[in-house]
Image (cartoon, rainbow, N blue to C red; front, side, top):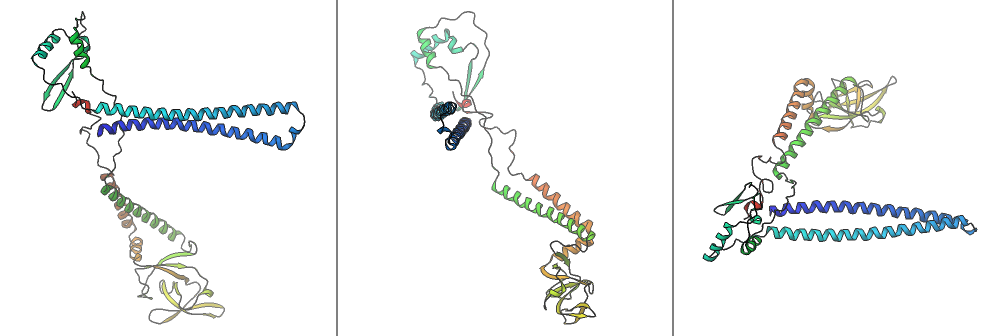
Length: 381
């Protein structure tokens, strides 16, 4: 089976080269077809313009020339189509012939039975008068049989001074023992795939590494954004951490609240707002009042106690709550160096694991491989 795979790879290479030639022919056909269409459009334009109605010899000659060129292009298209079809048939026949030859090469060679007394005497005469065809002038096959394995060694011989006489019996024996030259080996491209377990593990590690890098990038951008632009928003939205339990258990200090800047006049009762009253507190809107030309929001906490929020204290309306993220945010704000050091360590560990666990197990360099270090000829007499 490995030898068949080698031969199949060689066939695939020849098929690919033929496909490239066919693609070139198709491109030429398309170009010729476009030229035909262009000439046809020119003729149609001339015909529609009415110029041909006039008796002009030059236009008639031009029309005849265009017609001849179109006919020649059509003949070229037909010839290329036939040539394309013939090449395809020839390539299929060659592939079939090569496949049959490869199958014949892989058939086992039957060893000759043990020679009888008369044949042994004849073989002794042949040894006394060896032929050039047997020795082949340069190589001598020394076979040493151990079990079912036969090994061969090639020895360099000197050129004989005179060609020994060859008898009819020796000549017939040599013709039956002619060796076939081994077929040239085609290089085989490795297509080994990694194991499913390794691919799954690398996928998990790559996902975790991506999440860690994204978290570090987002944390850095948010920290820089909040420090340099305290009043800026993204699409009118901004994230805040909760500093107290004024709205517990609905809003806890471990939460992060997404706040949208909404005009005070558009607030409705029961809306939850964020203000700087009492070190950034959340409260439920009870009413909006106007006093001395200034607007005030009457807000209430979880105990029912109300307090006034001015326009300067009002930060926005709470639109979304992210539970549990406040712990990580507070740790990152109070221990910035440790936070980014932990993220960097996680990223390095994940990168090291990706390097230690490749997608496929590396092949040992000293391990022999069929088709590269040995083939079927090494085991054939």
